[in-house]
Image (cartoon, rainbow, N blue to C red):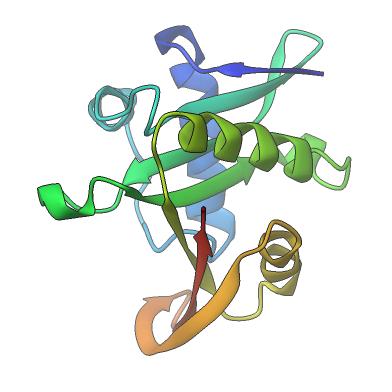
Length: 162
């Protein structure tokens, strides 16, 4: 397993992994697939602080994680939102923890002090993963999303870095 910063050559794999989540899960509230051009724009808003990292196994991208700027307002410059997605063929292989740890370390090393995560109701595995890294529940956004014809709540979790 290789953990590293993502580059533009990884975008087709990152896009495919994300689009699988769009189609098959409530991990994202996007309901239409993203194009490579969409993901290039998204990728261009990331850097060392607001990073995108990948987990590579046998020259294949098994998953990716990112810290995305929480807001374009300067006062929020220390705050990021965390996301993680795994390729369906690699789920259940214990990749989430090392991928998440690597991503968080990169962001923290570069000045991130608060990390937020929005986790759709029913995703107890993700909640436990986040709790493992010190995230705590700060609230529930009630009935904020609709996907697969179901109204869904979103758990808001936060990690504070000293």
